[in-house]
Image (cartoon, rainbow, N blue to C red):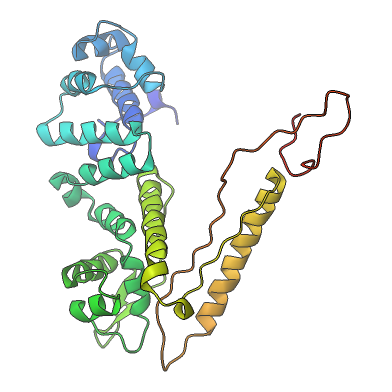
Length: 306
């Protein structure tokens, strides 16, 4: 069904994940109700001299500044809470690094209206951004687990507070990642969270960053016999990289299967298994020598030039 064949509703800014898409939907909504509405009219409402500026923004050819955001907020006739959410969404979408995006996402989700409308989204963000939610969920599977925030914090090597542990339990319950059995005891629930949209993908990246930080700290804080940290630096081709990435993914699945089948009823601990494969250089292109001969010893190790 095309746009003209159905009655469009005014888009809700609090359900938007991309401000450009939100502006596109708003434009279509206005156009449906007023055939004379145009990008020129839209731009004029926002106080822009260029009649095509908003069209370029929607198409991703222009970004918004703090000043232009104020103009668009006026054109959209947004309330104070809506305007702040729109501004934060713009800053999220236009952020250049995952760290910057993560900071803006935290601001985005501070909206009281948003939290009331979408409590699950807020809980998902807290789950990803607070690394300890994952190990606490694993701890719940232990027969020795005690639903006591102070006990949880202590057994997480004192890395978090009892208040943070309490918040993590609430987050896990809200998301349905843990449920209560007939005796009222918490147990794990097999449920997956989606990580496809930008907000969650950035939060997951922050989770990995936190875990890498914990891995670095463990070098000094954990005795060598209780950990295994090693690395190798190698020269490989791009095709070999893809093959190694696949091997790592398969190996991780094997490790998880072994871990699930090897839990002792006598003693156990929550471990983090991290496997990283990342470049220390760009791919180096190998050219034939000036005599027209063959490339040097790097042949087959570097990306070929087509």
